[in-house]
Image (tube, rainbow, N blue to C red; front, side):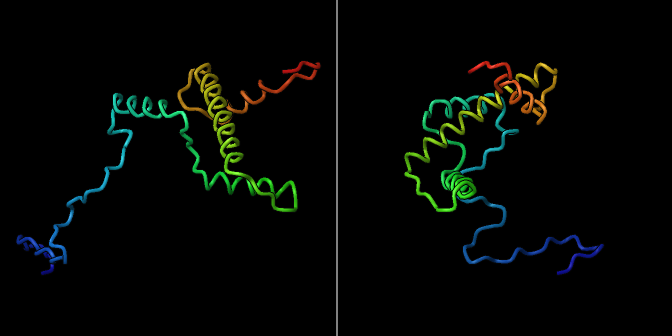
Length: 137
């Protein structure tokens, strides 16, 4: 039945093969929305991630592709990496990025801002460089 101006009768729902109504959620794990989690739920998730010492936030396959792409720009022949070497590279990369963003956020807070910007990260990278007068790190 087509909906018109004077139509007040509800439309009949089409029968599905499983007999389930539309809008009924299946037995899936609910997706986490940070806005709905609240402060306590977010703190609980951060604590859970901090307890896992082997947690890597970049997917392993994607990181492996990135390493191979960077390696191919330096050497024409394809090199092979062991899984332990890739894991070690990934751990070092993620630790470097974590401290870079943490220091960048300190620069953001110093500017009395809330949002981390590329200028803050650029400043941190500039301050981390060794100086020209022979200072070693």
